[in-house]
Image (spheres, rainbow, N blue to C red):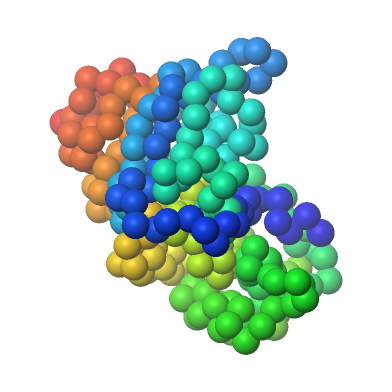
Length: 256
């Protein structure tokens, strides 16, 4: 099972967690076959902040996250996490992609998949210890899926799968999460569980960068918003971005 394919995890126990800046993107240019999708993208995210990335279809939102993590090699520019290159940060960053490549027919159970989030913490034995299982069970409880822990993966609904993937990311105990459209096509119960988990994550002083499609929710869910239209055309509070000329150009509507 390619169960780790949509959770890119970075592992280094020697990273200082005292820096105020969680993420810095500088002049990032990423594309496919020589054609740039995003160009000269620069922004910063503070520790403990929840930032939304919004934009029209084709604006490069998913490409941005993949470029930041090196899943697509940037042509120019850089991204750092906790003032370090992403490859040096290691266990402090978790990524949940929009396109789910998990084999949900693999003969495994929910708790085992969530436990894969602890893989970055394994020592020489390669086995999970008591601390690891406590983290797994805490993540399962946080996403309200304790009743699913022993259920085969093949029996999960779409909303339940989304909860399991976020639980796996939380089990990693990261300082930063990058989430690509976690609220897309989910039921109300799953939405409430995700928001509660993200609120708890932020209360711990941790950082979330989230690609989000529902413009009506950005005011209530996020501290700041980055508007992406090939590059960052606005970065401010939700009210300021939604009232900007850049927003009107990107979406062809006014939210003033």
